[in-house]
Amino acid sequence: MKGLIRGVASAAVVLGATACTDDYSIDFGGAPTAVQASPEVMFINSGATKEVLVRLVNDRNQSVPAEYTVSNVGAGLTVTYDATYRPEWSSTDPVLEPPAVKIQQRYTVTANIPTGGQRTYTLTSGGMSTTGTVYVLPTNMGASLSATAPALGEEVTITAPEGQSFTATATVAFETGGAPIITNRTAKSITFLPRPGSTGAATVTGVTLDYAPTLAARTLSSTNAITVPAVTGIPAVVAAGGVHVARTVTATGFKFLPTLAVRVGDFTAITVSVAPDSLSAQVIFPAGINAATATYSNVILGFLPEVPLQNIPATTTITTATTPYNGANPDGSALVINANAPGVALTVRDTWINFGADVLGFGGSNKFYRLVLPSTGSRTYTLNWTADGTGVVGDFDFAVCDDALAACPVARLTAARPETGSANLAAGNWWLVAALFLDEHPGMLTFTIQ
Image 1 (spheres, helix red, strand yellow):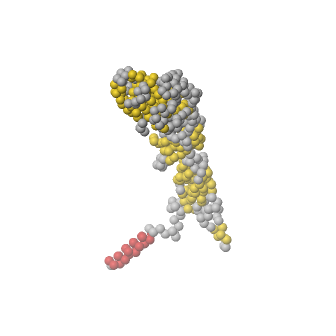
Image 2 (tube, rainbow, N blue to C red):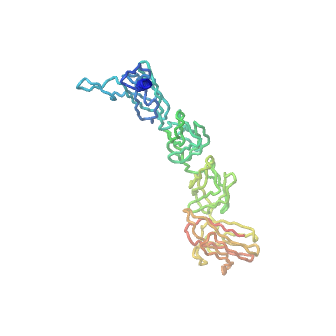
Image 3 (cartoon, helix red, strand yellow):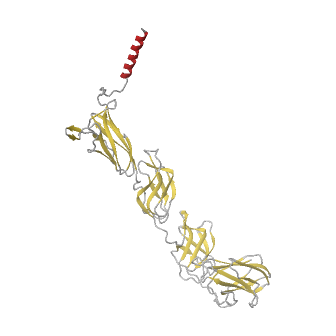
């Protein structure tokens, strides 16, 4: 009896298992309950096309042949029925025929939204609908620059189009001119001062998508371009002054760096000092300059201190008087240098103009200065010089000789720069002699006696 019961129970288990198995030979179909799109959500680059497959399905995901209506297509999207799609064929033997109504249809989705955005569209069949979502990835930022021809010093703002934002570390650059100076930034705009000579579209690195915040930041460019004037001249004004005297230089809209360098033709002027506010400088110009244009380096625009300008010509000319002495050696009209007491520094500057013959045999043309020592004592004599207009430093030598040029207690004839020598000399008249050993067009000379 137990064996019979055991056999009946086993049969029941087998039948139960069969009832729970998916047997598609049995019609479990029901009425359609939904429109299904695959993919329902897609990412697509602006200008690109992707495909979506559509089915009308029941609760068991079985599809039935159907046609669909496309509606509510977002701006910039195009959703098109693909009549060439053939997932199945019907037969009127012996001819295969493509059915117009299929269990699965294909549509193409094309995006034309250069600045990107989120859009949707609707597919409807048999009173049922589904909504497809399209995330369009941008190719640019549109005409996002507030100005395309700003004046020097004019601020420009680049504004993120709808759906885009800037990170807190976003950078801006142009085809020429380099990175501008950012003066203000928000998530939606960056205000900056473009550098002189900047041209081209603005390229921003650090653009995020509001509608797809999990995507990595990207680099995009504006469709409008900028042209900023280059700095072609500096309105330098040089105050009146005598030969070898420091003259005040100013330039409206510009500032001078402590490393200010001024050149006039073959000569390099001497920058004595730059004012603490950088608005003026004291410069000694070479003698004998006639209506020449000076060139300034290491100057900055007042609004753009990060950009030192180099080799900017002045918009004005400068004329300086010639020295009152000639090249005769020794010259009775030579510049007189009245030294101070030992230990008290005296600085005198001059140009190379009016060098004469090599009277002392130093290997280069000479220039004599009448040196008057008010008292006996040990002094240090130093000669330094600037480079010429082409940047060549050259070589100078010098000597301190007695009034008869019979002896030179100080004679510095080396390749050093500066040349320095010391001697304990008696009060009275001496000759300070500079010798131009190398370079046809040297800069300016600086004598220091202490």
